[in-house]
Image (cartoon, rainbow, N blue to C red; front, side):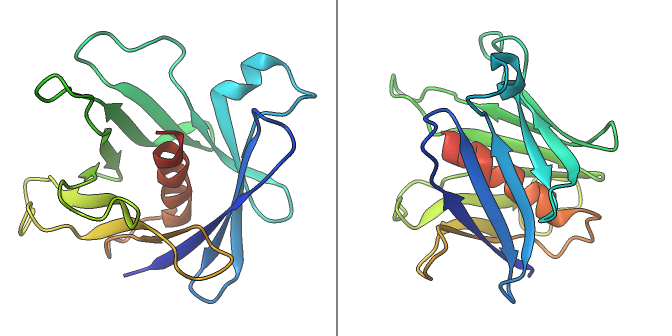
Length: 182
């Protein structure tokens, strides 16, 4: 399974969030940033995903309106002005308690579910990925995950399923961003 590591970059700007994504050989692959005190407020409705040289390759666009009750908030991962992946985040309350977010990921003909299973160390496992497609071998067994990293200086480790995705790093960085946002 492909392994990625991400590092949160701390900034003095309160609304700004930045990340670096590395591969298993510690090679910097992508940079994500959102918000800047020098840009207009409406630019915070998307996250810029760029190569290390600063050239933007994609964006993670947030919904422009609040989701309707019972519906999730759809986030579009845009590559070359087209939707590459759609990540819908829902929160269904359980027994009156606020539920952890559930991520439905639709990418390149695949449909995955990302959620934090109950009864696991919340500090370690941030998101487990499950195959929910019609050909899923075992939909109850996770086949990928986002975890808190134990390796310095990284904050998050991610393993994607061995699907043959065109832009796996973009998906990993988008998921890390959404999971961190809560």
